Each structure stands twice: as structure tokens, then as C-alpha cells.
Amino acid sequence: MTLDAISMIKSDHRDVERLFGRLKKDTEDRPALLAELAAKFVAHSRGEEELVYPEIAKTVPSEKDQVREGAEEHHQAERMLLSLLDVDTDTAEFDTLLNELVQAVTHHVQEEESEILPALKKAVSRERLNELGRAFSERKAQEIQHGLPVGNGHKAGSGSKLGGGSKSRKPNRGAKEPSKEDLYHRAQEAKVPGRSSMTKEELTQALQKSGKV
Figure 1 (tube, one colour):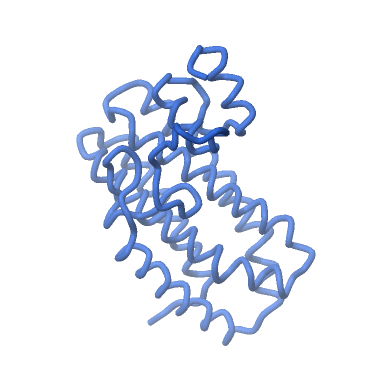
Figure 2 (spheres, helix red, strand yellow):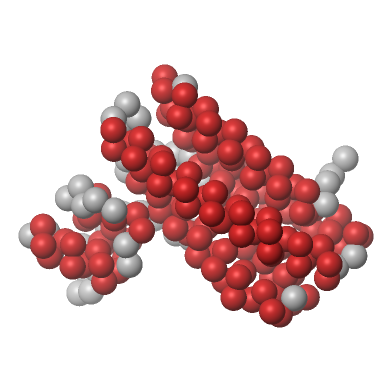
């Protein structure tokens, strides 16, 4: 039986929290758990951003800013996941990045469940929530099945796309002005701390200080 969109989103949140708990405790299973987390998180994010968030913005205009913020929080979390995929799972750096990701996602979930989802529940009918639930479920399945490889040869589940749907994470070093993705990759190579949450300008400044730009 397909649940309504709100119930499915909350169920995904609990699943992600479960994976976070296992990632902290089951150090030997971290590579597989991280791949599962990345696949599920990205599929969830795409489903929300393409189907649920537009419905909220349309039916509850007062929540447009919150919806926009929610999408950006998704992308920030995906950048953090990308960082984790490029770090050895038995290092202190992995633990630090994992804790940062947990904090970011926990904040996002709390805001979504206390503000955005209740507003949607009030604004649309039960029938519409069920329709959204079916579409959300189908979209997630498509994303997991047809995702692409991410990171430096890593794959998330079936190969989900991280970082706002970008199909390639290879830096374009020949460009006159590097993109944020290019700068992020250079920051990874330079091991710039805090890079996953930096803006493009902050990445540029950090790289200049490290002598990499």
C-alpha cells in the first residue's frame, strides 16, 4: 500500500537516521552503508524537489522561502556526502565529516517536519497527498535505477547523482573562470578543511591561501 507523500518523506527521514546510527557504530560496514545512504538521500531529494516542493510553493506561497532553503540544504548535504565518498572510512576525518553531515541533515529534517510538511498537510486534500506519494515513490525508484557514477570513481547505490544533479564531477581546469565544482575538487586535493560548506568565493580564497589557485 502506497503511503501519502508526507508519511513517505517522514519514513525516509527515519531511514536516514537509522543509517547514520549504523555508520557511527559499524565501522567495518561503512563503505556499503555510505553507498546506501547516498543513493537513498539523493533519490529522496530529487523526489521532493521535483514533485513535493513545487506543490508546496504553489499551494502555500508563504512557504516559498522555506522550500528554497530546503532545496539548498539538500545540495549542501550532497556536497558533504561527496566529501565522505572521497575519504577513508577508518579515519578521524571521516568521523568529523560524518558528524557535520548528521548535524546538517538533522537541522533540515526538524525544519521540514515542524514547518513545511504541516503547511502542506493543511493546504491539500488527502487524495492529493496520496497522488504525490505514488509519484514520489516512482521518482525515487527511477533515480536509484538510472543514477550515474559520482566522485572519483565512486558509486552511490546504482550510481546516484550528487551535487544538484550534475552529470560530471571532473574539474574543467582549462576554463578561464573555474566553476564551484572545479574549485571544490581542488579544495579536496588540497585537503582544505570545511570545504563542503564553503561558497565559491570562500573556496577561491582558501585555495589562494594554500597556493593552489
